[in-house]
Image (tube, rainbow, N blue to C red; front, top):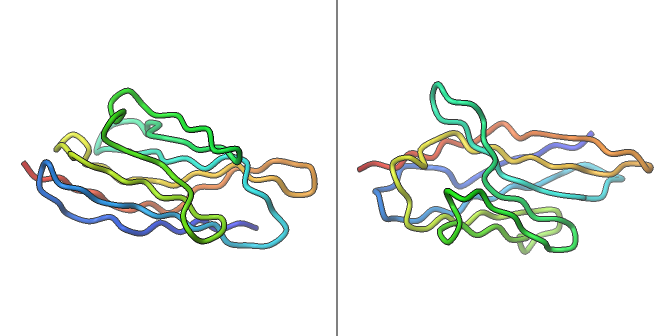
Length: 119
């Protein structure tokens, strides 16, 4: 069993910055891909950014040039640096991971962290 725990959400003014972190814990697993998704009120959950075990990154068009996903300093962690935040970035941000365990792949979600951007 793998657990994902997010941290770093909060309230910030438009134009400000926040850094989210996600830590994967458990045993006997390897990270394939870690991603961030977000869900605004009354909207569907949407992809934000991802990073593979090889370091390849991918971003939603809406956050390109403003958000940066990277591996954290600790093992099995991923960070999301969010700059020039906009009110439309307000959402619950979820960490998502695809992990390998004994030649099988599993998907896990974190519990989410609230990001609120005031205008």
